[in-house]
Length: 318
Figure 1 (cartoon, rainbow, N blue to C red):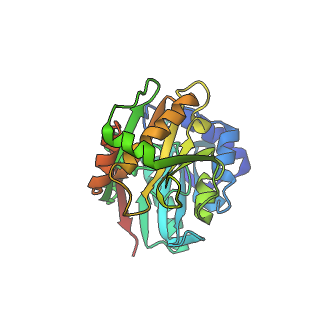
Figure 2: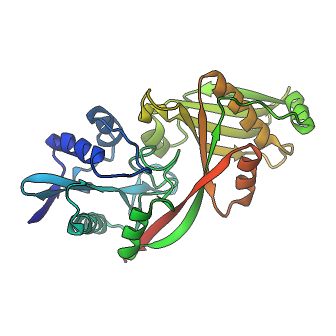
Figure 3: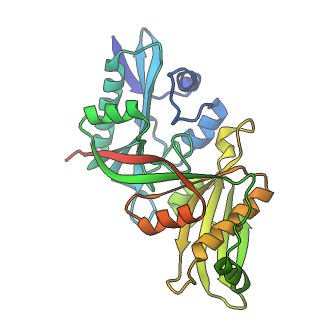
């Protein structure tokens, strides 16, 4: 007999055990600890124990699902009409599909009862209340195309594909700038300014990334005040641990002035790669909407390789 109940503080060891023993899952971070789970999940200001639901069989926790909400347009508070099933895991020793099916139903009921109009699977972009960096890439990518189990699961439950996200990666351990006259001209006309742990741009940004080490980079005109482009990276080793390759995630890249000289974005990334390389970073990860051709070309021109595609699967509640 399978039953379901909200999270209790004593459930953390069982959650960690399920995370480590739920079977092959290359899209999910391999390691999680009680301390990390508490810091990145339970400590969120908007955490609601009713949205973290345990599946119980024979008095043992055999799975869990975590549901939450995205932000409003101004990112100043939760928007309870935008539901997210952030994660669903079951123990590998409990393959009964009724466990996962029941957990998803419980999560959907929780979200609908709170006022959700739509429900997204895993999350994408600003729909990232929990598990940033613990699933997928430098940002939540929806569900990876390579993640067949989750794709089939949400399709079976009537979730429909929406936005698609291209995921990129670049090894910078041996990075060397490519000789380029255009880049040389930009080097004479632009300054790149770096700052550690910049101020969060919104309440939501502070909630989701505020506890993570960050590095910002700004491309500014020499001798002037024009800001042409900005980039923001976060240190993913905070989540993966010291035994893994050091990686930084590119969470934002904005060409802020339409009058920016051609190639400004590529030049900014090149200078960022050089700076990160000096700090011992080995890989940089980035994402962009599949329909954003200009951004995809910029990332490719900067030498980043496309390695997977994410899809936002969602369904309407009303």
